[in-house]
Length: 132
Ligand SMILES: [Zn+2]
Image (cartoon, rainbow, N blue to C red):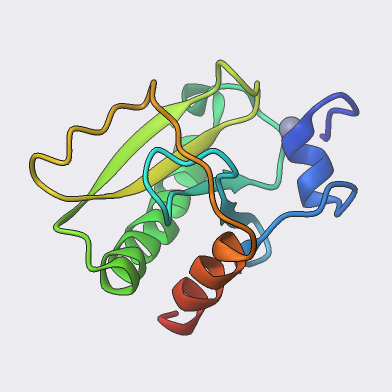
């Protein structure tokens, strides 16, 4: 059920290199290359699907267990005060859940993205993986 034009399907198939932080049989998580905050990760199902409401209910529930686990991991790895969760399927038409480490009054917005310095994203990914 993959889509040849989909950038996230290409990431799943390793046609595009990225920093993975988690992978199991059905889901993967990787670093957002233009994060809202450093440590921002995306969790996606390996099966191509545009909107979460199109996923079978049980699969969505199962995916949320992974999301919950990774949110806790991310909070520890980044010293975040809380984890922002967002679900989209607009910019890339493949279900993706954003987890963003946040602090109260950090003034961040999903419309303002930041960039990593050279090697910084790898370091964040490694640190997140170390808390799994
Ligand atoms: Zn896809």
